[in-house]
Image 1 (cartoon, helix red, strand yellow):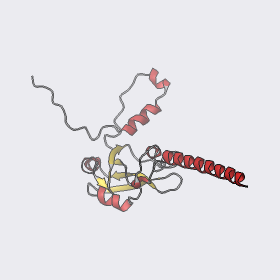
Image 2 (image 1 turned 120 degrees about the vertical axis):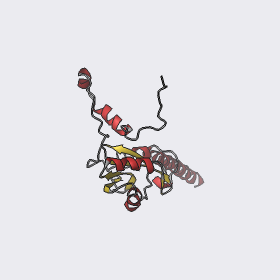
Image 3 (image 1 turned 45 degrees about the horizontal axis):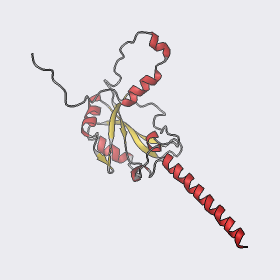
Image 4 (image 1 turned 180 degrees about the vertical axis):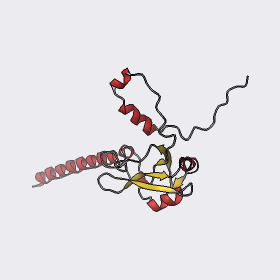
Length: 187
């Protein structure tokens, strides 16, 4: 009997981490009492790709130029900051066929665009409202907690930036308080 063959490459049409997390969140305690029925894979015929880790300065034209090499693009939706309506580092690319979307994941996922390695993931489909960032500051959640300086994604992470601003404000207030006390002693 021949040994089982192992794949060296992961399937491209596997469910995305985003989709799995969303499905777990939607389950309720009532669903646990009922027997689990196998669900049809929503990504089996998905034609939409989520594209992440884009520079904030990447334009729709650049994305269209790169992604149209894998097939005809039906629609391109840029991810926007919820409050400022400026690009926030992701987009959705919708193709006409599932094969074009898989080709794109194969050939373009992991390549560089604007000096950044982009991530591609199959998506169950774009719905209105998903083009906006879900972070507290309006952008992406992952940018809120980044502690390094990333010029392509707006500099410091929002949480780190607010923390530094608060520390600078405290230092300035302490310095002003010291200076006002020193002036009082000089008179």
